[in-house]
Image (cartoon, rainbow, N blue to C red):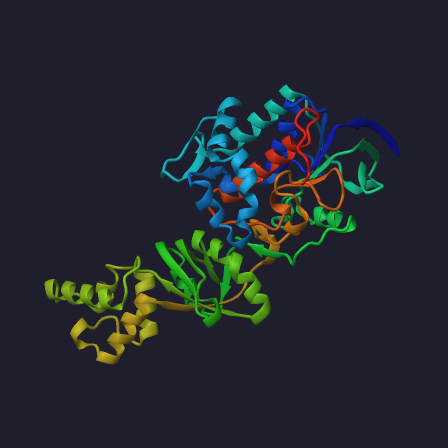
Length: 422
């Protein structure tokens, strides 16, 4: 095994968090080595947002943190140093223009993640980051509770500072295998229970397969369990052969996967009518029928929902779709209106980490200094990005956190900008 030269910093993992940590430290004159186990860097970043790369969003820091739940305030220091405006300016400096076409989500104007990756590679070359790919880290070396180096399959690299930015368990085809969690645990860190998040869900109900052509906008999804009634998410929904997907499902999955593990199945309610309640739906159907009495109940419902979904909801209500509104019995009409307001489904599973965009859980935040991202257990050890126990919804939240935490970790211990580990 070869003994390599000493570095001021070694970053393990060349994703969004690791790359920006390396660039930040190198800009401050640190000698930086970035290690990646795959043959290429930024594989997951390349796939982000379907390749469009939703970098961040335009929420202020307080609103942004609130979307991460009770752990969100851990980000306060990182966001103070590197919020969405700073991120936009950073990319502008390295030649990437961005925009927010909907006023909220921020993309490169090219809407191509390759633009981001190329600019980051160019910047790493400019500031002198040494990048080695196909380098699997076997062990973090520690002497007297201080990082002393890294051992890979073939080499030992000397350093007193390491940033672990290996990401989570989502998308194993892009290199995720949990190696960062093992490194953390071997050095005494607690890793919370890990769950797949942001992926399609399977349902018990089979009728969903008949609606696969439908994308429903502005759906509200609620968990229909007494102690979980606060779980409510909004967004577009797409039906699949065996369940549901789309932004609203990806966001809900963060909360549903722990419940699935505990209960085996999770009942949910879906409002497909853009927030209309039973009273509003009743009024709408009556007024429309009075103007167009020749329409069947299916045709009336079809003014609210796509045809396939309208047909399935009529079936669920036991309504004969070819009848007119007035010829339907009052009990059936009430059931139809209830189903239009809240359509029930039962979530029974998912494909696990295979299709998960992010991981829920990670290195326990209580063991990390939020001002520096440094471990409170081992000197010279830092964590950033998805490996930590923080995950947010769709919409640029998780990438912004990766960039912000990576920046803070990269800046915190520079030879020129030492921040005391409080």
